[in-house]
Length: 119
Image (cartoon, rainbow, N blue to C red; front, side, top):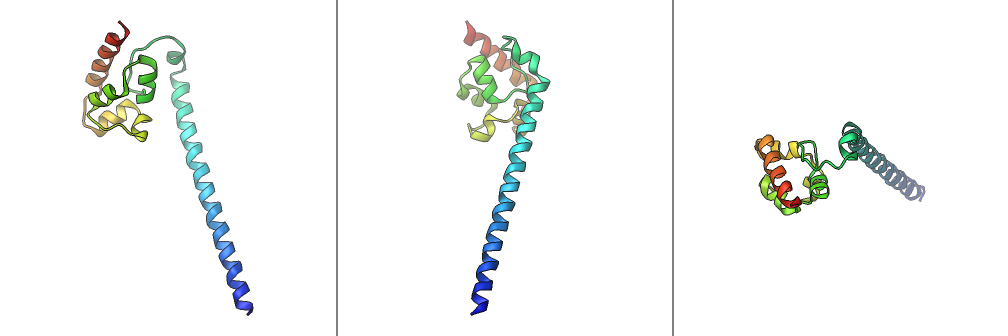
């Protein structure tokens, strides 16, 4: 009978240990993500403060959509990729690299579309 109690204690210990490891890993993941976003914001703070709607390669799809007014579908059409939660948060340069596109040309075409949207 003492073995059953010991087995339960081991199972509890393993369960709580795994839960703690998962929570620590999630905390680290969200901390790194937050630091990355803060660094991007800090680097481009002046640009973001003014009313400039010029699209640049460091911007994410969400930022392009929010600042320029270009519909998200048009941005993805220009990139030739599917709309997704993760792609919404990637920098334009990263999306161009993944799709073997010339980022300078993509940015120029998006800026042209942003100009048409504003008029």
